[in-house]
Length: 236
Image (tube, rainbow, N blue to C red; front, side):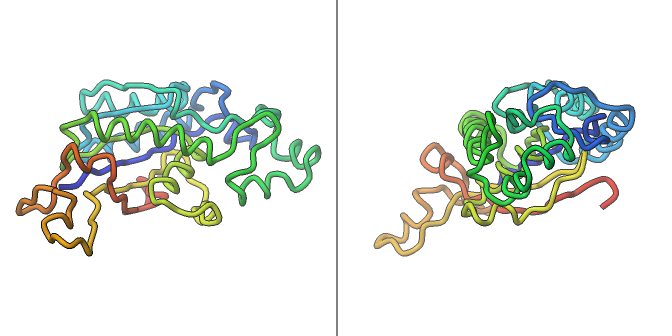
């Protein structure tokens, strides 16, 4: 059995368009961002999505609603899916930050353990977002062979994807920036444990069907995640 996860970045905001740092400021979608959300929703509506979750910030929530309307689903929000808190950088342009903190944005992009003044690191973001995903893995018994959609933010999706794939910190920067209403797609399967003395234990007591090993209460909190695609969009 497999569980598919789509991580969708919100549509464009005026802050995105003017290279201004949003962080956890609650900025709304621009006119283009609303159109992006509607166009992406038409594609995602055909992806067998059964649950829609979102950051509680309006730019993500409104993007999620565009999908949910087409599949008659409810959008459930959670603050753990918010963007990185950028501390003193929030509301400042890239130019302003580079003038005040020379070289800091490059350091921030390449070191997930580093945080802006008064803000949080990508590692911290990854941990809170991963906690949310793990809760759904345990709680959503109907996730098998279907898709869960999470609408969040570029930094959050980058950090969460890196965490799900168990990347080392120096590998976090390997993902390019995620475009507005572009998404990452991952698949979870029961983890395989080879080499036990009893072959029946190799799948951690997992029931096996013609479709492959199944999730059950003993293995659902230890899934193996695979990356199926990054920066997917309606134009890719």
